[in-house]
Image (cartoon, rainbow, N blue to C red; front, side, top):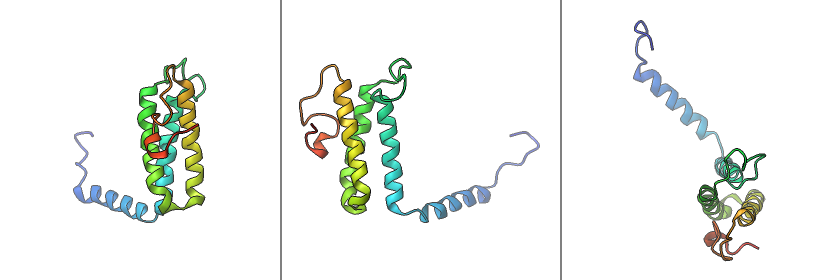
Amino acid sequence: MSESEPPASSEHQNGGASSAARDLAEVPAVEVVTAAAVHLMSAAAVKCGLAEDAEADGHLDLGEARVLITALAGLVTAASPEIGDHHARPLRDGLRTLQLAFREASLFPDPHGSGPGEKYTGPVR
């Protein structure tokens, strides 16, 4: 900000927050849950090495992938009864794919039932 510009008023800043709240109020809960799940899936896929050149670019990070997959499993498991099978099925499929990719990328795979998110989903085979 230059010296000649007046500081932003709190009224203007609150207007932006109010507008954002109105925008969020119009979004159905299922879309918010799905968007959050897709972000977690995308990040986990990169950390599992599923992105092009992920290993070469240093993106492979199974510790980080474990956290993301576990968070995704908790979200999908908790939200599934609320959002319905039509919306939950593709999220569960994506989660399972990530869990299997994690196992495949691991030099020393976790015992079945102990992989990321499996405390919420049960063993993945």
